[in-house]
Image 1 (cartoon, rainbow, N blue to C red):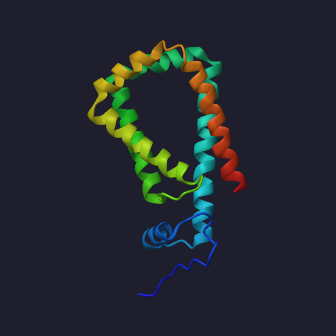
Image 2 (image 1 turned 135 degrees about the vertical axis):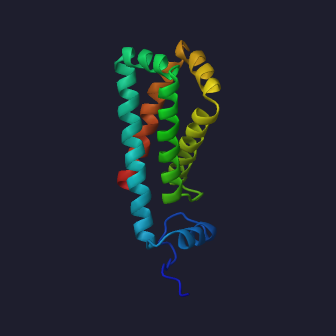
Length: 160
C-alpha cells in the first residue's frame, strides 16, 4: 500500500524519523495537520489548566469542597471514568515521544490515563493521598506553578 503521508525534511518540526514513522502508521492526517492537532490539544490542556488552577487559587472554598468530595465513592468513580476516557482519547489522538515541547501533550495524556486507572482500581490510595495534600503548606505555590505551566503550554499551542 502506498504511503499516504509524506514528510518532506523539516516539515514535521522537531520530530525524529521514528516519530514520523509512528505518525504515518497511526494517522491518516498529513504532517501539517498533525502539527495543527498537537497545537489544538496543547491549547485545550493549557487553557484548562490555567482556568481550573486559577479558580482553585481564588476560591479556597472550592478547593476544600474538592477534597471533601474525593472521599465520596461515586465522585471517585466518576473522576476515574472521566480521567481514563480523556487520557485514552488523548493518547489515541497523539502519542508521539518527540524531542520537543509537543511531548508535553503526550505526557499529559498518559498522566490523565494513569490518574483515571488509579481512581478506578485504587480509590483508597487516591483518597489517602488527597488527605495528605489537603493541608499541605505548598499547595497554593503548586497551584501558582500550574497556572504558569498552563500559560506556557497555551502559548506554545497558539504560537508553534
